Image (cartoon, rainbow, N blue to C red; front, side, top):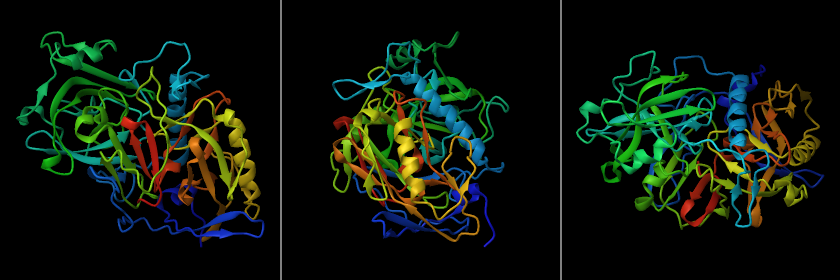
Length: 463
């Protein structure tokens, strides 16, 4: 078999795992590599929870409803953007974020950025859903982000280049019978005014603006309209979103963004009365398969392993959890819980998991000890535990499990361990920096955010 690039290995391979036990007593997973770039939904399993479910796909894969005509980003480009996002999140929590007595993520005493004025890096967002907006409903394909609150779509008028090219037509407010601009007098506009947004100069319509960590921006009219999810019975009337008329820095062909954060403007908060302030998603194992996003279903956690959800009172957008150890090859590393005292943000938009240096060093050493049959390879951007898989059709890697507070352990899927030819983890600046659980580690799990009961859940093999 000819060697393939790490990026092709990452995006196109289909992984099949078998847990095996070696003579050293450690557990391993066998990965069979298949480089066929085809869309397959045969492994997709719907959510185990009640609620409303929509299909979710990788935006760069063959299942994407908006396949890009542009060249796919390289692995190095994606990792560079990922680092920008991670650094932005960590700056929000400051270098010495800690968990207070109530078990919440707590920010240090520094001035905080306002969530709707400064969002996370947008170019790392990898997963899209399609929804209907307006009456009659117009299909909009949007990226999802647990690190954003304000949802938005491109709206007419929005001449190119002020707005980026998209596959379908721009959403036209004039053609929707249920569209309304939010007025300056509305409470929703008052929430935006403290961020430098607010009233238009002449028409008294509320204006919004979001500037992301990578420098991209979107500005326009804060609006209301009917949002349709999986069917007419699941319509969200009066859904608040940004109608974007001026943008910069966007290069994909999606129509906008759906904010799943914990702030007041997010889809989750706006639909709390109908769906119980909870949602879940399953990120597919590869770009060639599909997952799902479900609103609702909180309170029924059968089949999930759960841990306490951590929140920040000062930065309500993000959801967090606290690790207490990591297991490699079936054996826990025996890390002190104090190593993870800063807590970790669970984020759909960050690709690579960030660990405190003490934890990452122990993980890397234990993982390399179980990979002696493979030659080491040069570091790739932020990833430095890499191997040479050239010519391989099958590889064997040690199992990796994340152990959360309360003992909840999730045994990662093989494609949640490797990113191309490297271990899909990186170190934070120091042990006091907030960690991040990235989307690679979340693949194939149904991840439940039950905000109402402050619970995070994980169900394996969901997609």
